[in-house]
Image 1 (cartoon, helix red, strand yellow):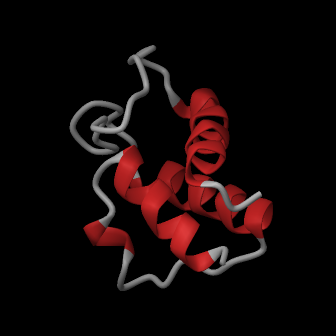
Image 2: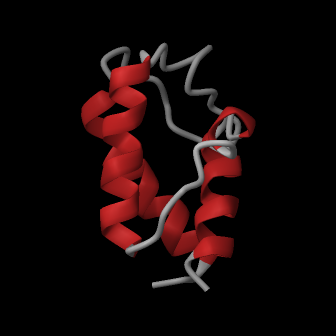
Length: 80
């Protein structure tokens, strides 16, 4: 499953359990600003994503991934 739209949809599914504020999850939703995820929740989410696509998200890349759309782009690139 490496189609960008499918990846985005699946990432939204994986984020849903962490979406305590019930924010409408779209491309521009920020993990810090909108979802207010703490570092432990971010690492749990990263682990779920890495398991889902059998990839490794480099730790130095994580600060650059501020929105769901940016994360979907990164996963699409790494999953190829």
